[in-house]
Length: 162
Image (tube, rainbow, N blue to C red; front, side):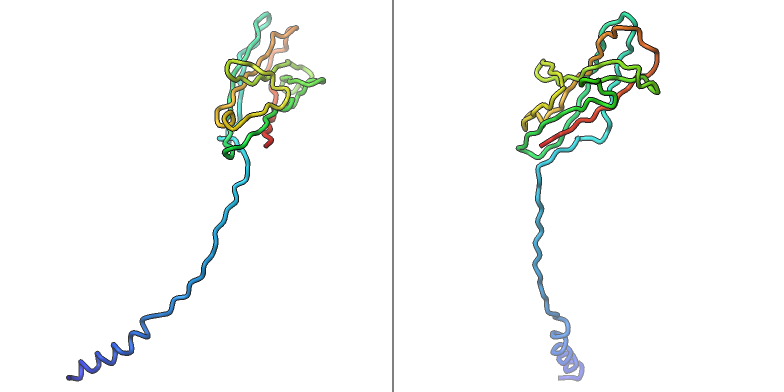
């Protein structure tokens, strides 16, 4: 055996315990809890722009919709408040900007299967109904008196209880 072979044997005998480190393992658990809940499918504000009201004209209406993403298998109740300019005995009013005493009454309806339901109380929705777009219609009856010209608006809040 030559000198080089002897050195290689010595190095090979020493290297294994240097090159093989011990391994220690630890286990950890990952958990998640999914709770019932809903959220609106987009963060855009729902805007309803009604056609112009004209003296002697007819009732005007406009449709709108929103969609919720809810935990599968749940049901919910959806309500709409009376808005920023609520009528004294319930109901909705559009107010002339900067003149809150100049009001135009309006109504909000839930539309489903060709039926219109006044949305003045919470409406129950099952899982199937929650998975679809929820349609509503805003109606402004023909005003009983002449209206002051200008921009009228209201802000309503949709609440989902589950």
